[in-house]
Image (tube, rainbow, N blue to C red; front, side, top):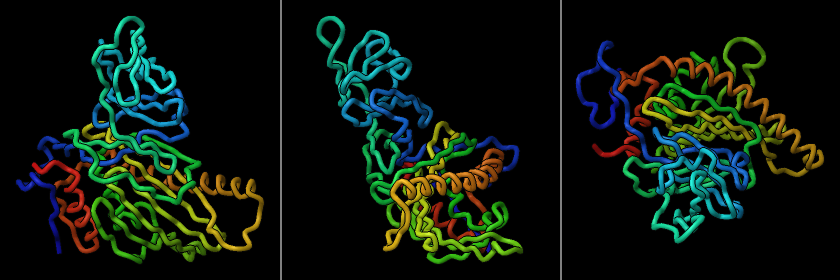
Length: 339
């Protein structure tokens, strides 16, 4: 049995191997730009999003902001030598100062001109700084969610660039068939994927494949896909009183380029009789998070090698066991322009 799934505008004949590659448009979503710990007060960062630079900074009162990169005076790049003074972002070229709302509020001499920086909407969640992106500049249609309990922050992270559209990375989560082939794990679906608004939730039981004693080690994984930019996996380990949170954050940097950031946090499963001082528990959490990150990086690198060489198939020939991919292809349409 085969099934076709495609995005709007792709109902044409199938592309042959010598036809030019057609890129997907940029989707609307919340996308990761920085770890909270990177964005200390007064620091100015430049990050890439949808083919453009975004300047990210934190003011003296601790609030994060993100703006388009060029000063409206004479076009200096605010991420190349720009500074933060109090709550204002200051241009490195002529020291024009811009308030958090983007208004030019001070110049070295005379009255400030009627000029304003263009802002991105920013949210800070679980130690991550997200910005809203929409191709037409429209405001957010949903809010960036908390994907772990308050106070749970990632303590281990790793990032890389991938030569693939952001949709392909998120789709990988629903491609169950590749788990045994690429990652050598067994799979049991506990709760099938369910799409509701900008979210997809599912729950799987995963474990090592092949002979050996480790095949008995099965762990439940709760998956939350939030838009096109955020995947969170929750792994309870009740036998040791811990729960692991793993994030895969996908940021489109160009038409066929994505920044992939993995991050891991570990927390206690609250129960009576937990042993160890708070300092000992925090040390344990960090060690477990680092170990899980190392395992995750090795598995993701197997995916990256495939993503870097594959092409996007607008009308995949799906088969039995690929139903989750069909669901995903239908779900993602909400993040693209209607044309």
